[in-house]
Amino acid sequence: MLLATPGCDLDSDLSDRVARLEFEVKQLQAINAQQQAELEVLRSESEDLRDELERQVRLRHTPIRSRTTTPSRSTSRCAELGDGHYVLDLTTLEPEDISREVRVIPHLTDGQTDGYKLYAIHYDSLLASCGLRNGDLVRSVSDTPLTSTDLAMQAYEHARTADSLVIGLDRRGTPKELRIDLSRD
Image 1 (cartoon, one colour):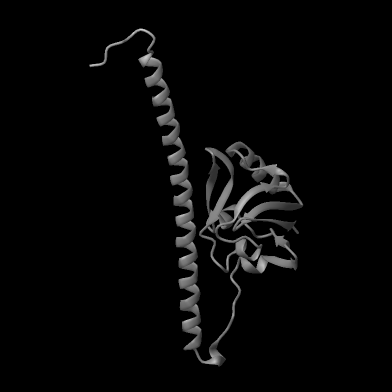
Image 2 (cartoon, rainbow, N blue to C red; image 1 turned 60 degrees about the horizontal axis):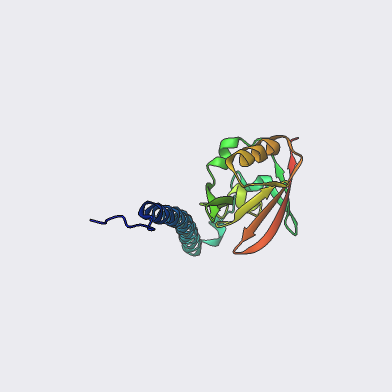
């Protein structure tokens, strides 16, 4: 049992230690969430590579005359103009089409959201045809920084009526910008 001695503030010392430990727990939880997101990206990339390998093996064992390439429904609606510039045809696009093609996780730095990490993007999906890749960290959409859920929703609402989007992202630590013109007719 500890006895209080004059000049020693045990309650204050214990409070400081508890506060430090709580802060460290929050930091570790943020790091764990980031590592989980990165693990999911690696799993998704592994699945994509496995799918591509299986496709190539099937193609190798298919007679040349019976080989046909049919673009997926979504890939045919996004055309690359070059240098990170794309055109996306929205005439038949449903919001569910995109939500089924990607998993999005908030990315935290020092416990603060600084963007959203994308994963589970299939190599022949609509998002892949628009230049997005597994592991991309989207930091902004049309000058709206994605530092909170509210700002992400604001960017989403803007995207529903915009003529073009400029997506600021980091790909494997390198900043990159994609411009996507949206065609509605």
